[in-house]
Amino acid sequence: MTAFEEKRWFFTALLALFSACLCAQTAKYSNEFLNVGIGARSLGMGRAFVANAGDVTAAYWNPAGMVDLAGKHEASLMHAQYFAGIAKFDYMGAGSRPDERSALGLSVMRYGVDDIPNTTDLMDGEGNIDYDRISRFSVADYAVLLTYSRRTALDGLDMGGNAKIIRRVVGEFASAWGFGLDVAARYRHGGWLFGAVLRDATGTFNVWQFNEEELVIEVADSVFNLPPGNSLEVTVPRLHLGVAHNFVLSERITLLAEVNASFSFEGRTAAVFSGRLAGAEPVIGIEAGYGGLVFLRAGLGNVQRITEFGGNKRLLADPSAGIGLNLGSFYLDYAMSNISPQTIALYSNIFSVRYVFGAE
Image 1 (cartoon, rainbow, N blue to C red):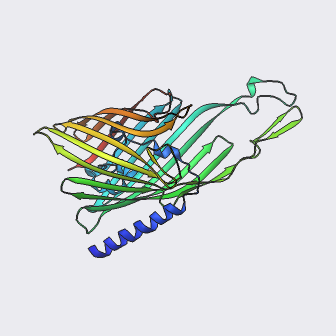
Image 2: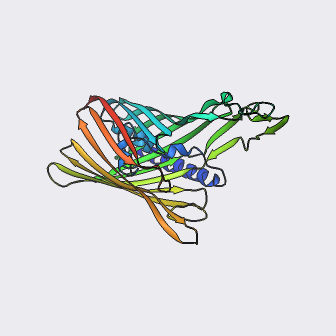
Image 3: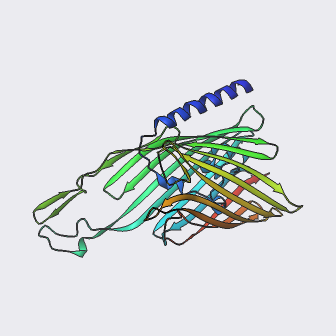
């Protein structure tokens, strides 16, 4: 494929996917667990990681960046707890470069709440409470990302995408399967990095199945049926844009700065810039490095405009911070971040590790 053909194919695909994005405006949105973010490095930078993503976690932030893996193979793990440990988020990912121009990746995520009391059978048929009838169940969301990234014939332009498989489980009450696609591009020019990711490009569809037997409660000769709602969920497309630059301040000190903008298309939201068709949220992150060994990070994300009782409007934001260590082929990162500025939960301590096999 020539450079002209790749360029024409890229813009044709981008136009088609943007059209699909507009057509999906009226759909519901779901799979919000996929907006939490992975990797303590990126979370410490406020989730400003669309343009600079170049390790195995790029499968989540910008699939096009996986061609910049530091070695032949990479693997990463992360564990995070939210809401005082009630909710747990786990991630593991692996990436590989079969040649100099392409990369493949596999990522698995789980966000869940375990050990939830099931009191639907708390009363017997005569209306008597029996605590021995309480059981336990879990509510968990799973995602598998299959990633492909490739350098194009256009100098500086990389492209990539994800095929996403979603599994959602609500104990024995209900479960769903879903499938979606992400497309991404990244461009390098004169020390600057530009990134674009269209998540759920054609809409991600979840189809639910309900266990009607578990959704019926019998109490004292009365039957209470808990009817399910719509069995189809559609995650609306979301566009993420980013620009980054790594400034060399001295022989040993560097400063990476990135600015992102996230555009949603489900109508009016709490975004800073919100209209009938779309809303936009800014994200800012920085990373100061010393000798390529120690890194300090800070960021500002989840910027939202809320309306309080009485009609007063104010801005809320989620500041974050982190630190990273480069121990050769082993990377250890820590971040202190919150899941949303509107929650009353304490900040979460997030750790992630990354190992590079065959570092160059």
